[in-house]
Amino acid sequence: MDISICSFSFHRLLAAGKQDIFKYITDCKELGATRLEPWIAHFGTGRSWQPSLDAGADPEDVWSILGALMRQPPPVLRAGDDSAASIQDADYLDRVKAAAAQVGLPFGGIAVDGAHIYEPTPEARQANRAFAYQWLDIAEKLGARQIRIDAGGPEEMPDDVFRVIVEGYQDLVAKGQEKGLEILMENHWGSSKIPENV
Image (cartoon, rainbow, N blue to C red; front, side):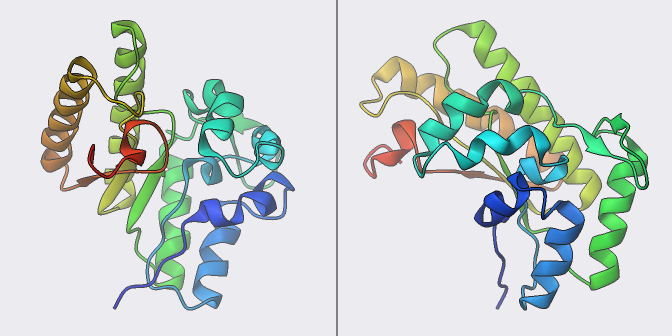
């Protein structure tokens, strides 16, 4: 049996600067987890995510506050200095992967906020899809098995919204298969809060 703790569970430690992706990895090992399930914010310094402390328990509140930040990979710190680097830097991802390997924990899935399928405009949908593709690449580099992406859209989910969501997941599933990744649907806000919609 595999046991994992999504790193969002530690978002207050992250926002307080007491945990980053490397501390999350060692904490999971100490807590007896067998897989890693990071939330994308943990790949940054934590400093940009301070508003998550004030957002409350509702993911829609979190999204309204952090949406702009989630559309760009958060900055990361290089070991030993305060200069920001892109999460896509091979050196940083190599260090994250090596830290996980050192404690013997593989990446199970990555929770990707800000890549949800439905937005009312084609431009916004395209931006979210591009963000999802970036995280597919990151997940592949880390050897993750899955990524989780929200459907988005209103809870009542009219037919035109449903069509966009279906097309979006079909596209991501096909891209994920090319990389050996499963695409999972989050179900904590928007149209996927309704079981019948799911």
